[in-house]
Figure 1 (cartoon, rainbow, N blue to C red):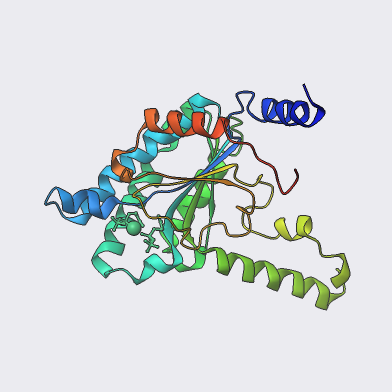
Figure 2 (tube, rainbow, N blue to C red):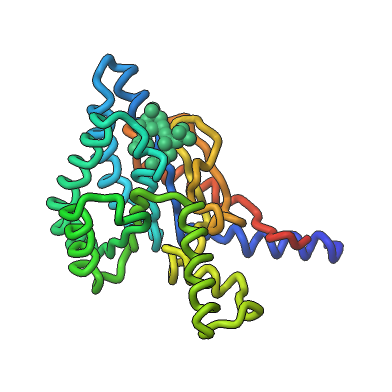
Length: 249
Ligand code: IPE
Ligand code: IPE
Ligand code: MG
């Protein structure tokens, strides 16, 4: 085999050796359209979507994914009608109350990223309790992006760095990408290997802009309430065939 091909072959072989993505990030989109298509109120789509969250969390753990980040509510979603925001906050309250047993049973550690001060105090208290109660679990890490906006996250990291420089605890020239990553909400988490967006939209909507620099992207037309383990498995199988080059040849 010519050296060039041999090299390419061994690289792609290595890259495709049944690598399950370590970190999968999902933009769970299409709840509203799912309901509207059935003549139902949008709230019913969100309710069904919350069931899909549980199914996919279980499935990701079973498939060997170590980190699953779910985009549940963006900073821009606060601009939706008060009714819809209330529905979503209600579902969130239910989830926070009811899911501890299931998370413990499946050895899932949960964490939340986003602008907590925009959420109601009872919600942030329940979030903190769930994070503390599952802190010892070492199976899947489920990261829920809630009231999350990536630009806001980056601005807040810049402010943290600027404050340290101002105090004299950090030299501006010592700031690098690795250190900056640790100032983001996702600190201590690896970058996503695979980003999936449901519902057919092909955009990132202010999600993990810094972290997805080299993620593989997958867009499916399936609406989130119809997404399931079989489709997740098929997308992961597609991921396994991709050759990630990171700018190298
Ligand atoms: C995703 O579904 C859930 C949230 C963004 C909170 P949507 O509510 O965006 O559903 P569509 O996109 O209007 O169908
Ligand atoms: C992105 O979906 C946010 C979440 C899935 C939580 P949106 O429905 O809010 O995004 P756009 O408005 O279509 O970009
Ligand atoms: Mg949407």
